[in-house]
Amino acid sequence: MLAVLLRRSAVLVLATVVAVGAAACSGDDEATPGTTTTVAPSTTTTIEPALEEGRQLDPLSYVPAVGDCFDRRQVPGAANKQVDVILRLDCQLPHQFEIYATVEFPLPEDGDTTWPGDDAVRQVARAQCARPFDDYVGMLYETSELEIGYLLPPEDNFGVNQLIGCYVFDPAHDRTAGTAQGAAR
Image: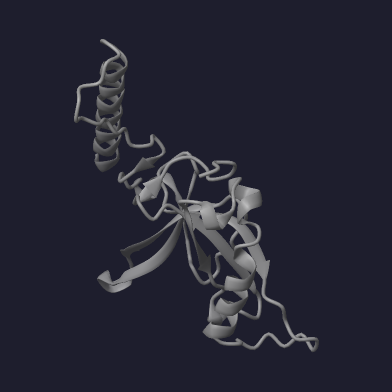
């Protein structure tokens, strides 16, 4: 029922945007002095897709892949406690984040997979994640309106997964529909 209401709300919002856009494009070409019209980009939204629209993944076992779009959510778990999940979504659905690159944490020569600490993993993420941004998004990170974040490998699973997920998000909006790949913004 909630999914139907959300879809109906999205259709109503889309119809309103189309109607406002059509009205702005019709009529005479002279603008009324002292007024400005701003139309929000069609790629942003506050609508949260239902959990059933994505795949719930355990953050401890999730291995990020380039092109994954996802939300971080809390869902009811055992004994009515909230648990964190990664909700992987189709990129055409509204989502919070998109993986644009992955970076393998460099292990020492002896192959030791002991957790190096949050600071060491974050340092590698900060140093490596900005580099591939422009190849994926289509413009330099320093001039983009988008921001980046890091999905760090979990300490509990570091022996198996040392992959850092570099993700992009729009800090001005809750969610984005569509991919950031080639968006040049």
